[in-house]
Amino acid sequence: MPHMPSTIVLPTPTQTAGPIAEDLRDACRQARSQLSPDASMLMERLLAYTAEAEQRMAEQEWRIHQLESLSITDPLTGLLNRRGFEDALSRTLANAQRHGEQGVLAYIDLDGFKQINDTFGHSVGDDVLRHVSAILRQNVRGTDYVARLGGDEFAVIFTHAASPSLRSIVQKLKRCVGSSIAKVGNRMITVRASLGSAVYGPSTPAESLINGADKAMYAQKQRRISRAA
Image (cartoon, rainbow, N blue to C red; front, side, top):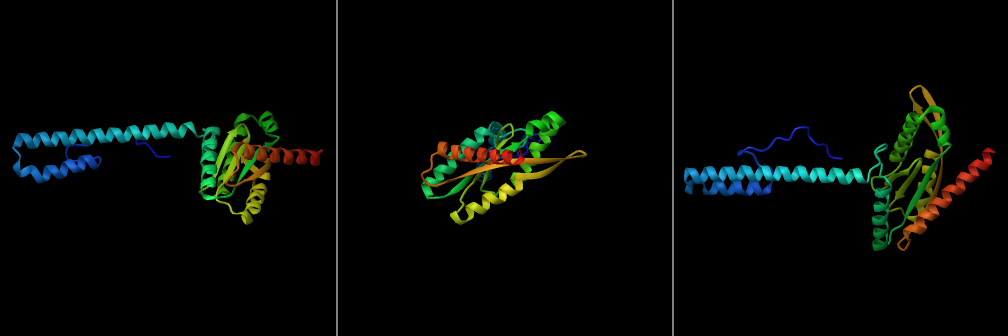
């Protein structure tokens, strides 16, 4: 996410802020010998106004980008939120259809997260969510998407994944998020999660893909609960 400077310095007549001002400056240099002092001063003022306008346009574009980023980003973890996830999934499936690609959608749900909140408080619970987010980030590629869908639910879209690598990708993520230790202050909290996945191809509808990953995740959660009983 771009960093907005705390102070914006507007350009002076000897500065430029973009290609329009630069073109005007070049024209001014070429015509300076044919201009009267008053006309030359007017040209310099026009150049300053143009540079300032371009600077303000750049600032406005940054603000628009900031608002767009906030609208698809989860403020707690910095991951995509549900809206960002839906946008990413829509683009991913469109690309899969266009280029004949395969990939995997994984759904992750934390086990016993309510107990963590009830026992240690919501601030500790937030730290646990950030811990899981960091694990997910560390185990995806730059072309993949990671989202927090809400509460303790996460999703990962693995793009451009050929068939031989699909199983290993999912198994690796299961090992990483299935059980880990979150260090929160002086506490060491065991974090467990259930993961389910579904493979998508060129003609997979979004709804069936989501339902498949969701059902697989809940099936694993039930198996874990049954083993613990």
